[in-house]
Image 1 (cartoon, rainbow, N blue to C red):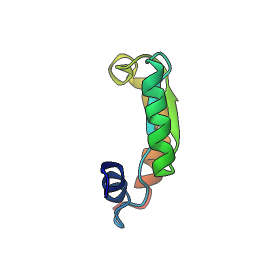
Image 2: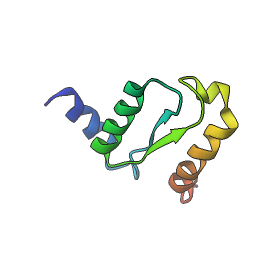
Image 3: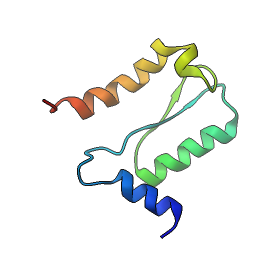
Image 4: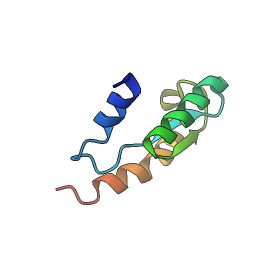
Length: 80
């Protein structure tokens, strides 16, 4: 089993309801956006775009939060 298959199997653990979401910033180099799209396709999850550059979660946390919040709400709605 190759690296990607192992990582995909780990992320698809039966206890994990949703694998996650990938994100890439609008101003980041294209290679990072391509990698996020590739990983998203492998995991069958969305590849979200966020504003800013490579450090967007530090530079623009409120705007990144708007993109991430729906995923977090979805995966935590039945917790506790």
